Length: 391
Image 1: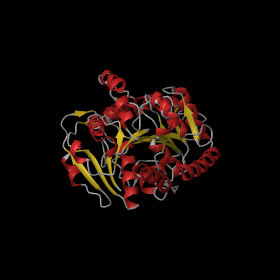
Image 2: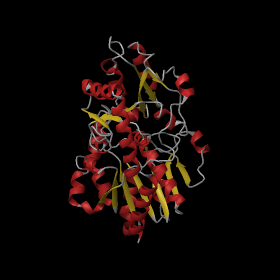
Image 3: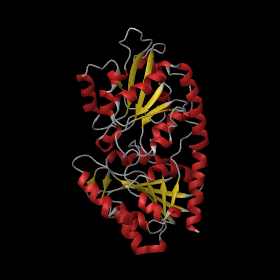
Image 4: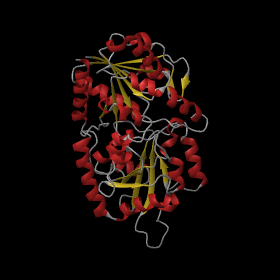
């Protein structure tokens, strides 16, 4: 098959939707399919990055909306493909593909991977609300098939009514993890030294994610504000010191660093240097617990959670639709109520204090990753769906 993957951001930009598009493109290419990724060109340096297994076409953006961009070139670039997979949301790209589908009809097989609702901050919220009401349903209806990361998320999302009317059109395929790259290992001694961590006395809480405006919903401000509630190291009965390690880059990183400095927490909340994909598993294995403190439904799954499970790490995450499908509360981690500092602290410290509980949850976590998020199995499932649709 000749497959087009259309996505708003792609490597080297590190974020969930782009990571899903990358893993699917790579997996499908390894199965013998001809894959081309279409994505906006944001930086000249991106043009220097090539992928041997599949082609990436970075198109000039004629105006940008958040992480989206208007790409009229898609209108004539997608005609020779057996199947087009649009990763939604993609403002400025999705609308072009919708119009193309209206014109080509059954001649164009369109799959939409619906990753999340868009909420937006105070300035963009009105635009997103209007788009969700008038444009988004038409885009979704035009698809031959809609893939969701989690049907639990769909049931309470902006597309719930569409899914209820045509349930046969909606299918769940979770994001996947490379189990040969993410697996449990000993703490890296060089990283312990680099970040001043004591393997015996420090309990490391790890966050991994983009730190830019498009990912405001990751809840970093809330997490920093919560630190004094979850940090028991000042009490007389403390048997450990809490350290929060934040892995990520973006235009809000300096703001978060200033927040930490203003609170006098520089020795306890540590922002890492940029981390390569190759080194990322070492950081997961540096921690006792991985956290996802997202604050609204713009977070629909949490790829960092399944990477943590694969490394046999218990996870703590906000009780959000989709996210809670990954975290089995009390089994491989805990969920806490959104923006509730005390609830977050109870979950984290319960794990920090109990070595046996962490070990048990970690083993269950790895087993779940192997059973439900195996990359090879999920890519084969995706291929099967594509082939049935093209036939």
